[in-house]
Image (tube, rainbow, N blue to C red):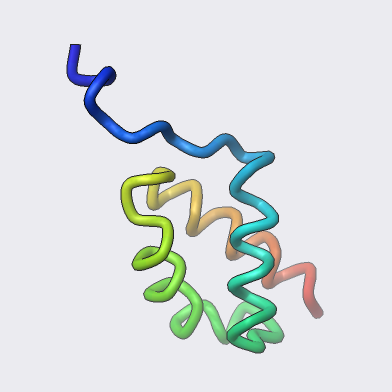
Length: 66
């Protein structure tokens, strides 16, 4: 019943380009920048995606940025 009142959660396909754009905007270059990226991601995507999914996706994108 509560689901009807909660904001729609983004799918992985919708979330990936948003996370990538924020990583590029910040200028993060690798996994060492995770601490700079996560607060911005969480602030901008709060309520639109699960925090674990955001973290996992950021970690994956940052590790492939090398």
